[in-house]
Image (tube, rainbow, N blue to C red; front, side):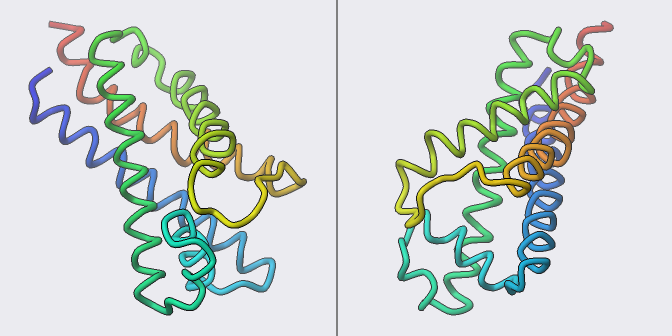
Length: 157
């Protein structure tokens, strides 16, 4: 797989995963009476702490950029590993959701606690289960499918 194919897989997989995941998060926040701006500011708290809520639209934009940045990093990680272990993309419908589980737990147990996120990380229900499913099918699966499309031609050659 050449570098252009890898980059394409990262951009496509990361963009789709980022869009689906943030739409899920905004929808879930809305069901709890929160606005999209509040949700995006909450994402920005990872960088700014609680001051993100006073940052208005610029903080929300930073949250959106940070969210997509993380999505592209996750996609780049999967593509890099799958490039060396192409059997990962032989069954992207399995590898993707498993990768999504890894992303979910890494975000909740490592990334958020090490960031400026001002809340204790919880696994309260039903939010945690819905977030896990979102990471499995809205993050991991699109990333694995994009990687499979890029890597499979090399496997078959």
